[in-house]
Image (cartoon, rainbow, N blue to C red; front, side, top):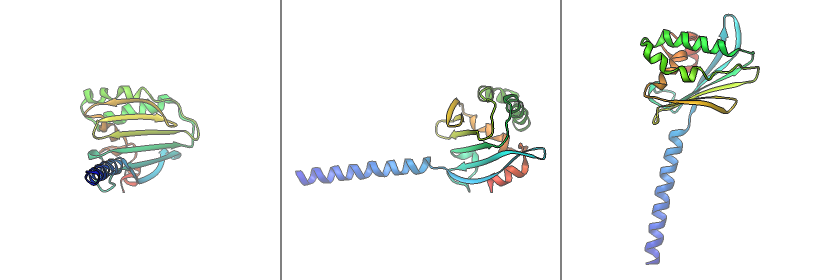
Length: 166
């Protein structure tokens, strides 16, 4: 009876450990690419793209983008650019308005600040953080389309898109 219980306990522990390991691997994001954030001829920071599988389409998985800034940028510039680029890449204006709660969260940045956009595919949740403090979250079936700003058909910068996805 004692040996049977030990075998059962060990089997259960291995099953749980295997499940945790699989879950942890599914949550791990790999750095796929990075490139300079250019406004005109001036570099204002660096963007980095992370995904579970860099070879897989960004629309089908957990992804994250980090934006590290080397220049001060006012919040209105983020809001204006995000709204403009969403309208350019997402043709349905009703879909664009879904993203207003995230776009409204932008704050001014100064040199050294880091914005992070993270999307969890299983929960359809998009979160925005500044310097590792979550500003807010949007949970919606179309939330991942916010990344069209940088990865869509008419992105912020075509060269940057290529550097991020290659």
